Image (cartoon, rainbow, N blue to C red; front, side, top):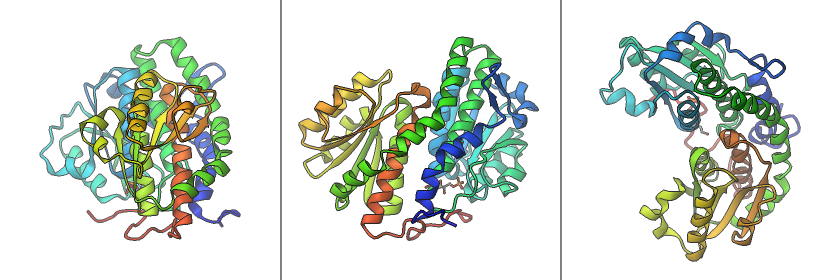
Length: 366
Ligand code: M6R
């Protein structure tokens, strides 16, 4: 059942080239540059004319929502708010009939996300669900939706569900941008071609497994970790930290890199591993300075960089090179080494990777 892998989590990490492909199958036809999403069509006009989009989710699904905020605002120029479902439901939020609420949930059973949906529904908003489990409660209560088609995810730590969510949300942002005329056609076609290349690039990123295992050996006894990223890689930093804490029980914090100097930098000393996601994108120069700031305080830098980078390797203690891609699609690749890092560290610490203590696969109580 684990397909020869030692744990479901590892199997699910390695399934990602396939699950990402499944999440876009039939939705993106690169020949003829065609994009379509059946669940989306019925509410297309509402989406396109929405004054605002609210995203509600928990945990890893909330991180996928953060990526979607950047994508939708960039491609479709519609304001997006990403909310923890648990906070949203109890804080008397402003919800209008013209709002579109996107609820993201792997299981489709998360109690807080369900309650947030019910609240938004009662105010007349249109609810769009992005779920992995077919026929789940959230899938049934939403007005429309799109399944992620990642296949069953057994490991408590979400991996392939995250990349499938990000893929579906990327397609939605692209469709919205195309229909609204806010995403240039040439840019759209470039993105489609690049999205088409992602499964093969994930496959290449998975080849880093042995190298990441070696790095994991060096850090398995650490008691703290910091993860930094900017722009599209900021949600990935949060996701990397969550993955590490939930399965290895090492305390980890994810931050947008520029926030470091507003507090967390005080934690950095020679004992502190800092994972920096520093791929070649529009904030590259800025993140180079952040790496220097960490080095100056003797933090140990594990950098995720774009293949061929010659600058960061001169400053980082460990360098993990991932294939180049558009910055908009970066999370789909940069999250892979972080999933593997947390997996190997957890295994080396003797943790129950698939069923970490205190956690359940779906959180059906608030
Ligand atoms: O099933 P959901 O996507 O609604 O679950 C939300 C969170 O409980 C979930 O992502 C959790 O954070 C994972 N264990 C993270 O790996």
